[in-house]
Length: 148
Image (tube, rainbow, N blue to C red; front, side, top):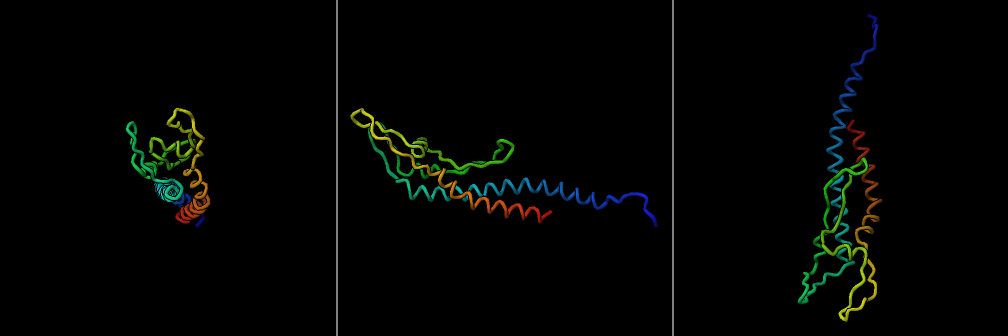
C-alpha cells in the first residue's frame, strides 16, 4: 500500500505530551520555589541565631521582647515579577531594616552616637545559598526534561 500523505499521528501525540507537561511544569515550578525558599529561610534563621543577639529592651517609653527579629524571619509567597516567578525571604520585624542596614543611635543625653554597622543577614545568607540553588535548579530541569 502506498501512502500519498504524511502521517501526523505521532506528532499529535508528542504535542499533547508537551501541552500536558507544560501544565505540570507550572505546578512543579511553584512547588520547587516554595521548597527552595523554605531552605533559604532556614539558612537565614540559622545565620541570624549566630550573628544577632536576642536582647530585650525595657524602658518606660519603649518595651521590646527578646528574639523578635528572629521570629520575624519568614518565607513569602511565589509571585510574578519581570516575566518570572520569584519568592522572597524577609523579616517582618518593624525594626528589622535597622538590624540589616545599620543605624545611628541617639544617646540618652540627646547627642548622636557612633554609626552601628548593619548585619546584612538576609543578603549574606542568599549569597551563600546561591550555589546550592543553582544546582537544585539544574536537577529540577533535568527531571522535567526526562518526564517529557
